[in-house]
Image 1 (cartoon, protein in one colour):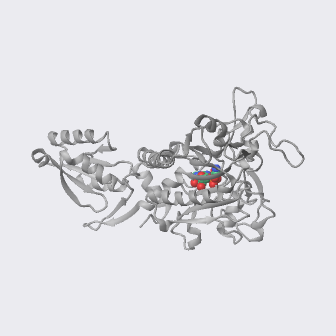
Image 2 (image 1 turned 45 degrees about the vertical axis):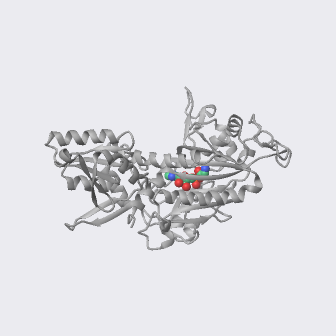
Image 3 (image 1 turned 60 degrees about the vertical axis):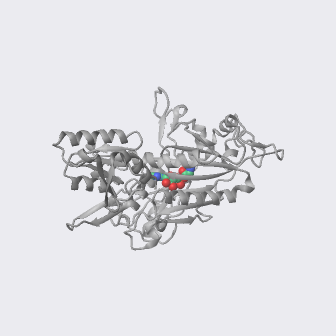
Length: 486
Ligand code: GAP
């Protein structure tokens, strides 16, 4: 079982402290969300798992943390300034604003693609909304403006400038972490003394002024990406691409996401970004409540073969057909010299790119389960893997008015804490405390009762089976560590 819809997770998140609407006391800000005490732990667990599995457990990936605000030229030569836009339409009757491609996807028949449509999307041609007789979702009229491109990059100014629109001070918040990796290719290559194939991984915030954000943390204007740029010889790119697709399929399942809720989508030639030779999206069943099965899926991540586009456009040497340098501003040539073959070339890049926020949503949706207890009450259990669980163990005193029991429980919590995230809780009856821990995905509860004071043993309760086992205090840490690893 998984969550019946995103709304269930929105409500659980708010109720238990995973995710809150940002600046809620001032009415919120549409698509901004804050990660609460449990949300920040879950997001960190996802990021740590990504980093461990690619940077530590492989021998061919280096880490990087590049700046959010880069020289504007980065975005000129990457193509973002010119083309990173969504086709925007307005309803003339009620002035509501929409993304044309998303309206067509939702109400029209013209596109089957259900992934991120906007990356370097081309301008909409003609008024296809009118032709498809698509009504404004707000007022029901069919009176659309022609679609026009809306650049998604957030603009800012750098330094103390007198005018907000001073072009010399204009800068952008990065819309992807990838470009900071490309511009550092030579730095990392030279300082780490790497040879192809190798990759650079980065985790960080990205910003896009989305026309229609929504579906909770699925599409927001501020989000976090985990990206790898993997540099290979051109003829090795297709095989490496497939290996990364298969590898990320396995990684997503290792987070507890079931195979039945994941599928691949091969982008068509028309959908491919201009830099891509092949892109495969991994989709998750974010909308299980939709009747039409095809519309239940949306993009969790993308894995692209970006060819040698990126290193070429940021290099000073390449020329166009007329012999003109394509990048007269760059001071570096980002080509690679292969000492084995004495050849110089621009490496191809395989790019797996996955959102932290969408992964968190998928992990929570997939872990969600409801169960009826002996009293006929519905209980929520978040069956997170031990690695994902924000809290690994909760230590609960059976009687909070008995100082010896409270003291023993607090001591046990302290003993466990250096090796696993443990909490102490005495704010309710034991049934309520168990239910609360089930709902936030804590794999084990440890209860200290009157007998514990004499037999030096505690009760360990399993979240998934609700079975209880008596374990001696000396064995407790090893026992929990073993069960958490299993
Ligand atoms: N460097 C390639 C790139 O940025 P993308 O498909 O635009 O590709 C990669 O983004 C991933 O980032 C997506 O698959 C998604 O998980 C996440 N993402 C993109 N836009 C997002 C948004 N507005 N809100 C939340 N996550 C987003």
